[in-house]
Image 1: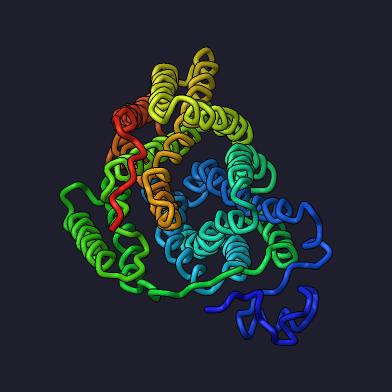
Image 2: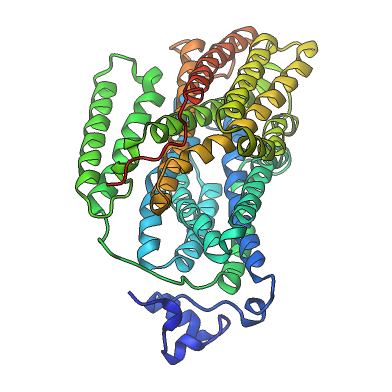
Length: 507
């Protein structure tokens, strides 16, 4: 397919503020040109990076803010943990399922309109979430919101790479990572403030004006896709199978307490997930352009790196799930106070992450990755020892959150570098999709596993933190932390394996 910038149609030369540009986008799928006054600027590429960073920051705010909302949703909807956790899990599962699909479609048809359509769907989903009358409706609207987020996520990194020269890719992606860290850190505080003042519905409605601003900036600033290729077509079989495979497996993990470990429904759900996963792998092996290329998984370093990536995010969001319940229910803190205290974790992560990248450049991947997981284990150990509801132990809880966040910061950047280095350069896009799937599946599994274990520890008849004695909730929270310590230890062992970043054999 020809480059889009070579089009000669008279409407195609119109600026983004013209009706013909809008008509071309709506009815012909033609990407509008950026505003000429902006495109002529010497720093134009950084305007593009800044525009993309808005979406990256907003998506992380939403992901971390939702964790603070869960205790309030449990109370307002009088729902058990297994149901409330789906507000977070369904969003992440949708991201994991649709990000590789939209990445391939954008490769075929262009990125700019997909990116802005993502914002439009995200803000519509956010507005509907705020209007949801019950928990089931809220979960359904979160899925719609997540489809929009997947459109944004699938295109953001590629737009930055497209807009910057090779020698500035690191700087552009570093700014995106900084925006994500800011969003992750600000989310709990913003969520707590909105809960304390306006109510949980505003935690979703606040996305609407930000999203509208991002759409306007994207329309005026983001360049047209320079080259499009639909060689090999689209992997429809893989696209149809990936969502049910991931959803069934995580659903079984999330519902094990509610259904029971020997429940026919749970066993059927697991079997369905395994069968869909096997069929997905077979479809990817036969596809000319698979969503996740099986050739990548012939490198042990790539597989083990993604396994460690999965575990690290499972541990991170397991903590994000259990700590808000502990701070609000055990320490009787307000949502705002809880959100501010929880922000210590992502703030430490964001501050230390650049150091992790620098250390990996100088000493290799294993040292900072293993040191990071060791620090995570130490932070979780502090939380395990002092999460008891006493005022004297609260400063040590904060110290544990800071140590855990710093450990994650040391780990994430070297681990991501090792994963990408283990893939051939020509497969960087597929490797990034696999990394994102592992990340979102880890987050989903971490929340689902923490929810199930917390509910199980509280007693099979309740499955709720409401009306539970402080000592019982503290004990149940420690059970979750012990599980997370074990997962972090496995991630550390995987990172200690020699021979990281060894690329697979070309096929």
